[in-house]
Amino acid sequence: MLHILRATKETVHWGYFDAALAPALKVKSGDHVHVQAITHHAGDAPDLMMDDAIRQLYRDIPEDDRNPGVHIMTGPIHVEGAKPGDMLEVRYLSMIPRFRHGSNLAANWGYLYKEFGEKERVTIYALDENSNQAEAVFAYDYPGKYLIPGRITHPESCNCQPALPGFRIPVRPHLGTAGVAPDMKGRVSTIPPGVHGGNIDNWRIGAGSTVFYPVQVDGGMFSVGDPHISQGDGELSGTAIEASLDVMMTIAIRRDFHFPTPLIETPHEWMVHGFDEDLNVAMRQASLEMLRLLTDLKGTSRDDAYSLMSVAADFTVTQVVDGRQGIHARIPRSVFPPRKQDPSGR
Image: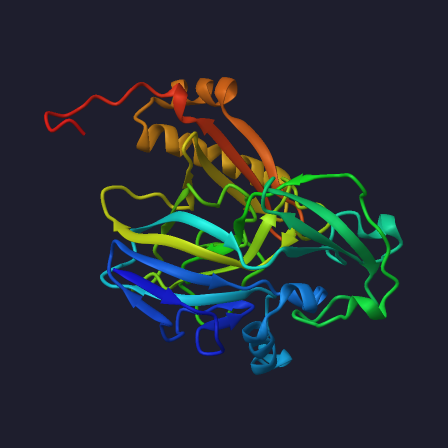
């Protein structure tokens, strides 16, 4: 069955996950969902990144209800029969930009903020749908400090300047933040990533990927937000090219295996993560999760897995700006032995 979940004041929660939230949508395992994911940076260029529905959404949700995080989350989606201990398999089928523009903010939480004199700067990019590339069209220094999520700034009132003339950026739409509700009381910030998913900020979570989330509470209570059209590993300035997306996905319950952290499968790779305030600790966690993937799910010995990790896995900084920094570990699917077919031919 196909469900459509639009972003309205009744179907979004701004800045938090909460296991006690009422479902915005109820689905069965295997259902398809078309969901609107709205960027909290649409106000950086409202004439280019907002329509009437998004303007209304910004008006309907008061500033004091946008906390403790910053991201607009659509959901939660309750999956009938999902229980703690299950895995929620989310197949991302398509991610289509809703507008031709997106925003990048060099933010006060950016990695090199002090190197730029504690200045914040917005760069607006335009999407070329024919080449699937983005190009900066103008930039402006943000007036004041970017603290309250969802502020609306009119660039014409700022000193807009040309930016990056001739540079072209590959467009790869993805969700910066998506996940199940954590098993905790009250609001949980959308900013740090964790075992529930959340603000992973890995650009591989796009069309064609499947992410397996460990269910924390009954129904899973899955939400999506923080849509991007491009980002580099590291997300150094604090943001990606932030832009709203229409997302098509299939959600199913898996009980044939378990993994304690979000697990990404792409057409070419398997991927795990580690998160911590200390990047060295995040690296160690990612290493242990890759070890777990190879031993528990792929059947290697620990000794063999350790060797394979050193010669075939890539460990990369996912982001350094979300409080809990991230490392992702990737291993090509091509290194594994071919699967033996069973008598049915599968």
